[in-house]
Image (cartoon, rainbow, N blue to C red; front, side, top):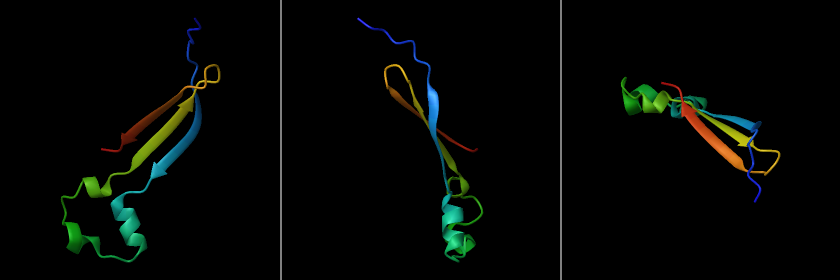
Length: 66
């Protein structure tokens, strides 16, 4: 049986905008909606997608800024 020693390569890097960025693009006054302590509201997300060229296995890693 074949056991792959994965050698993942980055195939995609996506940065998802924070809720704050999305709403300010529309001209919404976000201070009135969420107040000053909305840390989840200002958090961006980074999604990295990797693929092993040998066995074609996909691995996805997600992280957020603090």
